[in-house]
Image 1: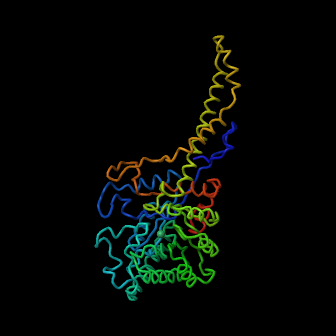
Image 2: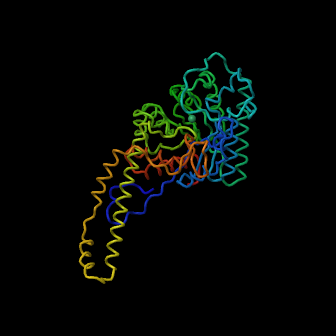
Length: 437
Ligand SMILES: [Zn+2]
């Protein structure tokens, strides 16, 4: 979509419109939901290729697929091989998947599918504080050593595979970190162990990988463990890192930026007015964008939604004004070239040519409409999973093509052109993850 600017409503032809480009730094494409499987049950055909296709169509030409467990890390790597140059992967153990470090965990971390496919799903992004797992269970250190050795092997294997192919596949260590909003998946004690153990592994890699980090309601511990592993200024962190799906405070965000870290913004970062205030303060030089699909879609109840509504109303007003201008130009040209066969047509011609432009008036109307408008158009049809059809998105399953909404909202909140947001995030992402631009 063309950049929206009031200058572009002049009759002079607009400058070449900007074509946005995006990299989704956090998309859980290894989740079976993108194969049509919901909680272990097939609901519709595998439409992963279409999901990737829609992303590419909107300009989201690179997708970093999150590995958050052994299984999803391996599946993400397979996807990177399947879509070389488009899909890249990460490998790590999410705090919500870190109960594998606990002695009460009942199965080997490396087992897949044996306990029901629900375990394969990426943990939902919303907190559920009703059943936190208490500390006291401790950590199974023997098991932990095996997990870290296996993760190290997985990374070494991926790097080995990559050296024989042209495109990098594994581009980050993670997703890992701390999540005190979701202690029902894993206790704080075990999360702290999981994060520290993985940080030690990340610091020992030669060369290191950039970090793909998760921090929820755990800022002080999160920063303390990062500094323990990489030094008080993270001076031993060679490739940098991003704290994705950021929902913390302005002060926390500033501390992370001061440490040289990048901030990943998705739909969860726009929920409240306070969230949006934080987004406003993210330096463009520190910004990355993501969808975190299938989770974290932007919803009408989110504070950030209004920026999307504003954006779409402005885009519509501009398009309407341009359409009118084009029609008038066409009319005038037709009148100029039409042979004057009848006297009365001659009489109409000068009046038509000299008619003042109507764009300012049209813009006024656009502004009026904007107040009433609360819906934003869907680029693709959206259907319920029970009514799945080819080419349609599935209601409630966020996918990478919606990243354009993230960019529009960030641009709206910060009051800067879309192009600045997209190009900054693109450059930051390419640089940190070592992607080709
Ligand atoms: Zn996360």
